[in-house]
Each structure stands twice: as structure tokens, then as C-alpha cells.
Image 1: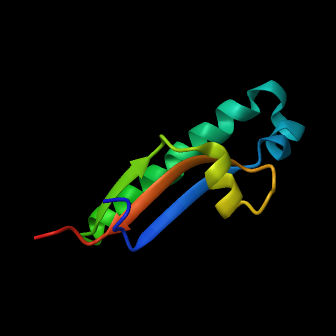
Image 2: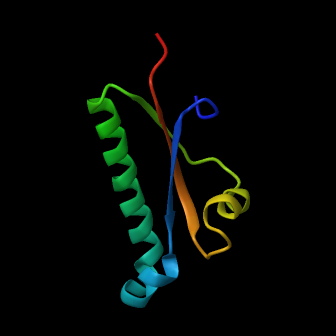
Length: 86
């Protein structure tokens, strides 16, 4: 499904930005928020009668090279969205 999906949304985090305010809890907070964002995308896709799935097993460095343009962003989720078959 991921290879054929017309839309891939990549959720990334800038953990250092959050560390300035929350210190050692920053990574926990950004991962929780990423989960909430992904859940919202999945719920909206369902409401629109679209198919959606998340992918969390990927090559961080390869994905970062494509979507983050060398920034220190940490890729957390890829959400694939499209029309279900049949």
C-alpha cells in the first residue's frame, strides 16, 4: 500500500527545540505528540472513506535525507493515505 499511496505524510520532530523548554522529557513529549498527530490523520482519512496506514519501520537517515534537507529533524511516522481497492 505504501508504494502505491498517492499521499505520504512524514511526521518529523525537532527534539532540540523542545529540549529548550522541557529538558530531558523532550523526546517523550515529541513522540507522544507525533502519535496524536498520526491518529488524527488516520481518523480523518477514515471519515473521508480513505484508506490509511502508518509506517514506523524505515531507514531514518535515508528518510531524513529526502524530507528534512539535512536538518536535524527526527523522522517519527510515515502515514500513507489513498483510496482503498475494491
